[in-house]
Image (cartoon, rainbow, N blue to C red; front, side, top):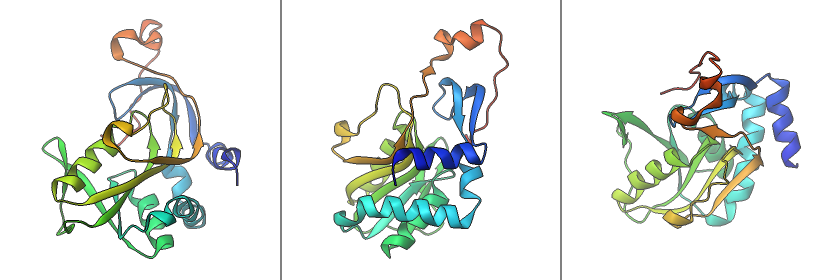
Length: 191
């Protein structure tokens, strides 16, 4: 399947929104991808997880690690397709941590999976958690890469894959033309 098929899933579920959005990264944007609307369908979730797993299979990971909340469903489906376990990190006191009794062994081969990559911040934070306990992060992936300019994870030495790429520009709050126009700001994310 090509990237258009995955973007059409978002369009078909009215999950590609237009307006003035406050993203989890703190940036503003005219567009927002509400992946929960796509992932609410177990068949679509399974299909997307399988597609990501196909890109990651050759890394021979032993676990998927994903940032909560947005990455949990797609991380789980990817792990299921790979036949490995899925763990997630969640924010406690402003930073990602392993909770709920999750443990990662030193040397464990981890892939990071999330729903939408905007700046790569959540992926980098998740990598940091895995590496802090001695895991080897072998790759990262997302359903959609919406970064502008295109993000890469070379600074953390991790190959990155996505099923589709869409250019949705982001703005700092200080340079946002939508703020200047007085367009009301919506915060649809989980943070």
